Image (tube, rainbow, N blue to C red; front, side, top):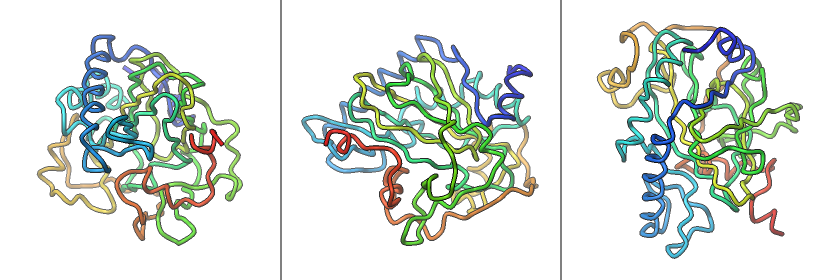
Length: 293
């Protein structure tokens, strides 16, 4: 269960870090599956429905930036997405829980790509903001290997404009351009098996991993049962209700006065947040190639 102190911290700061949620054996199983996916990337030359590849990827030296929707491709990931401890913690927050989707950001040693500042809410606004992402640390997250940075209290503020210079959605914003001071952003640090829970409106990002240690971060998105996506659910109500993990289905979305800025027109570059952010313009975090110059 989420203690009253952690519940208050989440409401105040918009995120919490919880140690020892996954056992060492559970983490090892997820690592083995992940290593196998990276090995299979030797057969892949370009981004596809499973892989988002680093720009430096080659068949001889596979470099995976993200495994997309991993829960659809291996039962270990699917079990992690429905882990009873995660469902219990989110039920403590909302009372009901519905799964959304997931991804595995690799952040490999020496070249793991950065993620520019953004709010998840900008990608998928709902009728209310009882939504969160849960990050599972498959490796120790340290200051050196590009941990997720979250700006405390930013989930209570505005939704920033995540559109690029061309007016299209790009999945990022430059805090310098909108006067947002991110110097107080907090790194989410922990041992493998720890998890993070961050609010859908929290401002967050992460720098390039230039260290010698991997930082593989398995993330799943969740929402309360009465939070409905404003852009619709293309697979229909039956599939939507199959995603319910706790509570009862409802045909009555809960409407709250939350700020909304739609992600339209859609990003020029599709496939993942990394592709979306290609059109960002000004970069806040240095890339591996720039750091090497």
